[in-house]
Image 1 (tube, rainbow over the protein chains, first blue to last red):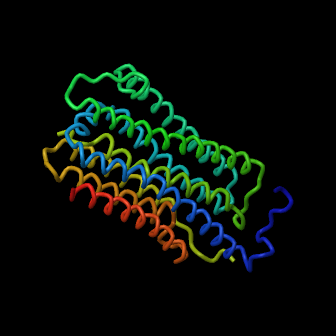
Image 2 (image 1 turned 30 degrees about the vertical axis):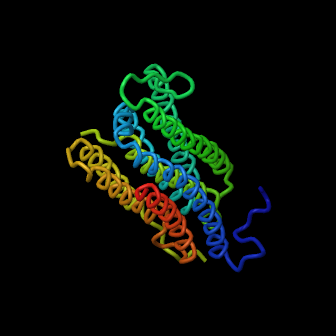
Length: 214
Length: 92
């Protein structure tokens, strides 16, 4: 897109209108993402209402310290992403690359901790289909919780992975001086996606890890 | 052309600190014996956190009305999906 990128494409009146259009586009995509995860949350809500004791017992088997740390990491990566977008708004090329690199690093840290968590779950025989053993009552329902747990966190982790890829790409583009205060839509739009992945995790965390800890 | 004012970094830092504080609160309340109220408290904190991220970090506060409507529709859709599904399960 090197020489084609000007402040404004011909179909728009001005850069402002162009920015609003791409903003609207990404938000429509984000709304479908919200609905996509919404289906998973609905499935979770129904099964949890039906089997409250089993879900409470299962939730206590999840690793709260690691998940809590991951929440803090993701929230922090949202801050560094926002600062990256801020740098883009002001055309500070090195600051964009710097903040986006930190965001990528934090995203990788999130996935690394997630991998450790999955490994610990595996060692505790909590992976349905693969190796699931549970001695307490309602073992099937506890297993159902872990199906949900792995599916929801797995799909979320996939989103983090995609986000990391996008942010890394944008960082490379920024280092090649692709963006200016008049044109930084890719930075902006990637930032919105990353923040939404953070928002989704802010719901995943309490519903999977914080049931009846008291 | 670029006549609107951008969110200042200080705002992002304040949002970040608030999010971390709310994370501590939500974990802490999970260990309090509140009975049925534990989950609503956790969810209320999540909604607050999500609102902070969306309004400030995602600039929804200053966004075009059309963009705001799209964002609301997403959550409205989830709300209908979950609540109506629960009506079915809870009234069997």
